[in-house]
Length: 305
Image (cartoon, rainbow, N blue to C red; front, side, top):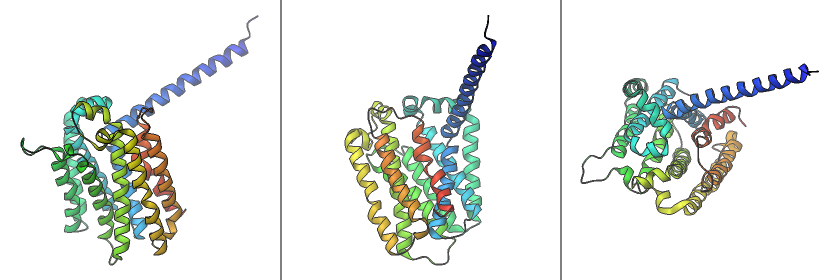
């Protein structure tokens, strides 16, 4: 006699597994779209700027948050267009998305940049100049001005410094422009935090792209140092946050979010160790964990944890 109850239970389980797989594939495709077009990075950048407002104990300006979104999307969009050759090895899915809709992608970059300029102008000319800096550095970084000179991206370590400075400038100075007076030491500490975080993160992404960079002759720090020495460097850089945090605590600048900042430092140790392991294949989880750090750090800061 057929046990229809067992049969129906098995079929229900099979349908559940199929539904889960379909949901996972849809979520995976959506996340790939977000990371391939820089939308995810732009959203994360907005949370990053919001955290800067929190560190300043200032009211967030929505025009500057939107400026940051459009600016990141446009600047990193330009970089994705210039890096198609390397990304065919490092990130073929990204190349697939860009080549599938090249005109739409290029138009969205132009429109985003124009919106970034307009929205920053609401705050003032200095905000516009801050916005222009990553565009100028992005062009110098990505484009070879003359055959006689290499792209800044091709000079070992320079690319990482430019990216870190660019992120730190926007994240630190856009909120600063909305405040009447801030102590110089506090501004420096905020700048250092975002500069060092960005420097660590960009070196980690070079670890992910190490195979494509080697193939194309791009001499990044990980290509030069290898995995083990890169890991030591990254752990050292992250350790500089310990005296940084103590100085901030001494001056009572970030007492409301002290635990969140301590968590951010510990989180940095964790993902450095995770992604500097040459036996581990680095996938999209690096985008979610490293680029997306601000998506969970900033809400914690908002709650005053």
